[in-house]
Length: 87
Image (cartoon, rainbow, N blue to C red; front, side, top):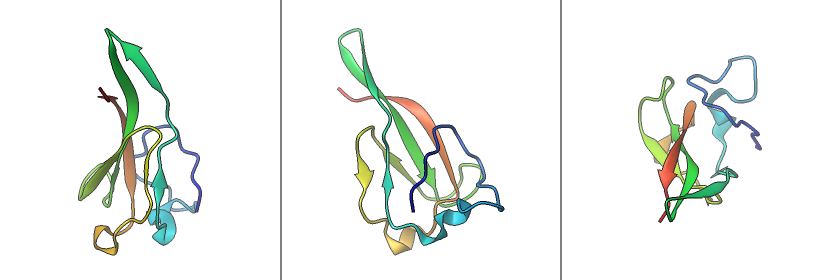
């Protein structure tokens, strides 16, 4: 399932296909990067298996993904973007 969400979502709306990613098996972060003071930064995204940014989490760097979300992680129910230093 593809998702084109570029903003924080504390809770996926129950009326959409986002709910728990419906067993989605992978995630990809297509955000960009930038340079600041000689360092490379990007827009990382942290996905959570609970709503309101709670529960187990995985952080995905820009231009990377998780090819297979482990069944033990469960479904993704919220996500948050944040700046992250890449170098």
